[in-house]
Every structure is written in C-alpha cells, then in structure tokens.
Image (cartoon, rainbow, N blue to C red; front, side, top):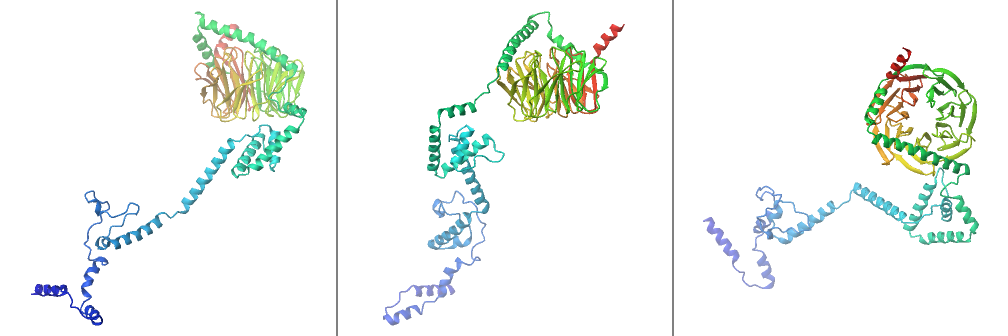
Length: 574
C-alpha cells in the first residue's frame, strides 16, 4: 500500500499544470510545489556522513580509463575526499579545483628567506666571476710607474699602506674591470688618451732612462765576469774527472760498486761515541772539519770560535772578533783558512793561528750559514736580508748579490764541480743557481715549512734538503723533481751533510737531540747517534767518513768514530 501511494504521488507530480491567467497561475504554480524533495538532491554534497567510508587511493590505478581523470596537468592534484566525488555538477568541481589550485600554488611558490639569501649569494658570486673574467681580458701595464700613473689619472690613490707592486697592479685591474662593468668606458678611454699623450710628449731620453731604470737583469762588474769565467774553467775539469771516474766504476769488472757501498755503510753503522768535550760556556751553533781532517772548528752563541785538534779534541786556538753571536764556521777546502759568520752582519776570514785576515761587510741583517766554493777562492754567505752573496777571498770584494727568495735565506751549498750553488730559506723553497751564467735553473718546491739544511752529493746529481717539517727530501737534478722523502726526525732538521768523498751515506742533525745516518742507495736508516741532552745544531763529516762531529745546545762536542778505525788504531799501537 505504501508503494502504491508513493507511485501515485510521483505520477501526480509528473502531470502537467493547467493553463491559468498570468496573475494567478504564478501563485498557484508555485504554491503546490513542496520544497522538501529538493533536500535529498543537495544534501549529499556537504554532509560527510552520506559518503561511504572508502579508503583514500594515493595513486590513480592504470586500469581507470583516461576520461575519469579530470585533473588538469598544470594544477596540483586534488585531495581525494568524498565531497568532490559526490558533486554532480562539473562546474562546481571545476570551481572547487580552481580555487584549491590557486591556494596551493600560492603556498607552493612562496619564496623563503633562506632561498632568497641563497639566490643573492649566487648572484653576487656570479657578478664577482664576471668581474674577474672581464678583468682578465683587460690589458694592464706591467711597469710599476705606469701603474701608478694610471691610478692617478683615474683619481685613485697611487699606493696603499703595505701594498706591493703586484698588489697595486691587481687593484688597477679590478678598478678597470669595475669601470667597464658600470659602463664608464669614456672615463677609461680618456685616461688611456691622457696616458698616451703624456708618453708621446715625453722626450726620448726620458724613455731611455725609464728603460734603464727597469731592466730585466742586473749588470755585473768586471770582477764578477772574470770570476764566472774562472768558475766555468774550473768546473769543466772537475766534471770531466767525475764522469771519468763514474764510467770506470761502471765498466771496470774489477770495480764492485755494491761491495764498496756495503763496506761504507757497514763502517757508518759501526759509529760509536769516541769523545765528548765541553765546547763553550754558551750553546754551540756550528762545526767544521779541515780538509785533511786533522782539525775541528766550532763556534758558539758567545761569538767565540775555537779550533780543536783531532782526534783527541784538544783546544788549539781561540778566535775572537765578532760582537754578536756566531752562527756558522767552515774550513776552506784547499787552504788552512776558516771563515765565520755572525749576527753582527759580518763574515770574517781567519788563519789557523787565530789571526784575522779579512772582514766581509755588506749584508743588511744577521748572517746564517756560509760555505766555501770548492776552488777555495770564493766564499758564499746567506743572510736574513733575503739575499746570498759571493765574495772574493783574495780581495774581499763582493762579487755577487743574489736575490730570489721571498723570505730569509738560511742554507747554502756548492756543487762539488763548482758550477752550481743551491740555497734554501724560510720560504720553504730551495733554488739551484748556475754560477757560470747567474741564472736560477731550478726551484725545488715540496717542503711545507722553512728549509734549514742543504747539501750536494758527490755523485753530482743528488741534492738533500731538510727543514722544519721534520723531513729530509732527496732531489734528482736530472729529473728535476723530488726522488725520495725521508720522515727523518720527530723535530726540525737543522743540518744535512753527505759523506764528502763518495756520498755513500747521508747524515742529518735534528732538534730531537739526535743525529741519524741514512744510506744513499735506498735511503734507509743506518745508525742513530744519540747522546746529546739538547737540540743538535750542526754536524760535519770527515773526508773518508771515519768521523762524524756533532755540536749541540748542551754546549758539548761529540765525536763519533767507527769501530773499524778503533781496531786500526789498536793494531798500530801493537
């Protein structure tokens, strides 16, 4: 019965209305229409209770046909909820999606503070890169006077406090690049025109003077030219003899090089403490054997140099003349002369009796190490004024003032042929100089801290350096690179010396209170000489390798001799 009533009600609603007049028809047509049936159509849109509780699907499965995905490509995906699915109006769905897309896009493309700062940093880095790129393409004068003149024309200070030539040139380069980037090319071109006009208006003599003022080389004296010629003649003979001896050892079947090296290393490995003597009231700073091995010279921070007899280490004479601490002492390789260096900026030449022969003055700061040329005619001195100088022993004239290091120069060594000199300094760099031409032929980079010791090997192609990085580096002059790095000590290396006759072993002194002997064949440790109670400041090796002398800040001289030498002494006594 209820079903029939409902069907009849629906049929009555479906019948058409009778025609009436305009005034009454509108009222009568509206009055009988109930508003209740409209609610079931609109109600499912908003109430969430009518939506069946189905799980949200995060990813649209591939089985659903393409027309069922009404989401536009550029709009963010709509959140899957019941009200969108239940809406029967496409326009409502589009409006709802559009509103949500707009709100989502506003929230998604909002730039955060971190993004803004990162973008500003990127733009700034890009501007700096373009500025540097533009600056690299500009032509900047290399003459310091021209750089100053251009800065003056651009209205900038010609120099700043502590500014060097290269820094001034870089400042001009960046200034020109900035003007170019800002579009002020007219100002830049005007400065160019003024500079060219000033250059063209200057007389020819001024241009010649300017060229003389900034040469690419330093003109030497006649004495230096004569010395270079003598060094070249001397080195040719010595190099020929060295090569002839090397070829004989290589080709002669009677020469067993390996056995000879083994014997030398065995002798070095048997070094024992033979004598210990108090050398001075102050710490000792330098030591050197005479060319015949019969005398030993030491110097101390008191400024006094003493000569000792060998092997008893008995004092022979005392040399006093320096007003400041003595930094090094060295015997001449050919005569009974010795030279001393001091912090009073002078080097002095003495004979073994203690008489002062010459004083070499010219350095602007305290001296460090000194070395004799193998010919015995020249003396090399290093200083904290960033130069090393070559002096004539006979006349006392300064032949060469050599720059090249950016910081103080500490060590100096001459090649056994006499053709090369090697210097090292606090700039962690070692340089090899050709004494015949005056050129710097090698710059050896590898140490990370100041280099204090340097020594040429008698074989002619190995060079050893030691420094504050606790390592000793072996350089091959033929390959122009580092051959081996020895992690030698636990503290800085104060001096390095090859065995002077054949160079079969190497000795290093260190502030870790030890000296160590290393094989020149494979650079393995052979012997550690322990006995000093303070840092070892210097050492020297006698010509045949029988003795090694070390001096230390504990004020003692220690003489190390091989046991084979002791056996020979005992046999002589018997």
